[in-house]
Length: 421
Image 1 (cartoon, helix red, strand yellow):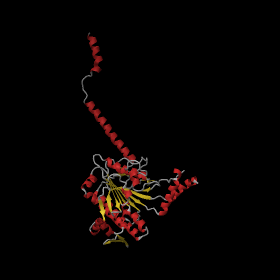
Image 2 (cartoon, rainbow, N blue to C red; image 1 turned 180 degrees about the vertical axis):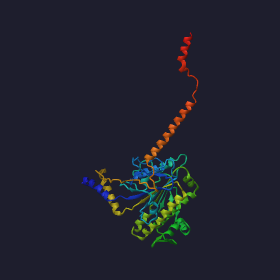
Image 3 (cartoon, rainbow, N blue to C red; image 1 turned 60 degrees about the vertical axis):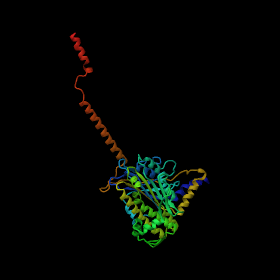
């Protein structure tokens, strides 16, 4: 019976279709801050994404080196800020603003493993956190300057991915967003003031045809009441995220850290969209309206960061698909089967990874590969080394004494003296 369970486990795990995510990597610099290999994989594991983040930021990786061709940062032109922006349950469509922004960007598929700790923690610490995570590595990497590390999310687990630095999460009891040190980052009164004024969130709601009447917000035929905890959490997370770019640069200390030479790490995880879908149902008018608001807000947030950090921003946008209850049950069943007597599956299913070569065009030339960068550095430094040797040789020859060398002429002088005697 156990053998049958072990044989069926891989099939059940495959049928459960583990949750997938779409990872888009891009920067806002003319001279690219990220180099993509000419032969790049289209499917990445969570550990490979963690390694990619470390390579882009130029720090030590929190996971073992995979040996695969992954994107990497420029050694001489590092980003000032690396933004990992995760949106859970986001439904991308052809008419969305986020889709228009990322349509021409480098895109990867990320599959969540069965033993994953969940996005985005698995991307910052690896699937099996055991040692130092990327937030700790980044904070300790600054030479004389301590980089900023911050995780913000309504989900406390996602916010806790930053085991160092700042962590801001939703407090259900206090109905507000608080940091680990107890400071308040967003409250209901702040949200109402913003909606009544000219805040970015008010502009986002106006763009999608939203209307605010007292504590009620209407969007595309759906009604939200801020007296409801779920609705308040959703709009307060929107308010915090749309406020964050200007809020950080308004603080002198934070602005100085963002502008220094060290690379800062910001992880923003929009989780309340997933919670709202589970609360109202994914076929509800509220969920459909929330998708439109999040699409507009995400576009606004990314644009604000790009404007405040010209030529110095790298973004990893992670769009996570939702997992229905049937998939969750199947995945849980497969894990229970594999856990019998701590057995491991006798075999696994491995899908081939598609390899796509870069096709250069006049508008979009192929970026240099790792081999191109290595060859250029070898040629450049070898040329300087040989030029140095040549210049030192010429200097030595030009500065030699012109007199006779006593060692070379010693025998000749001895023979002359013998003849005279």
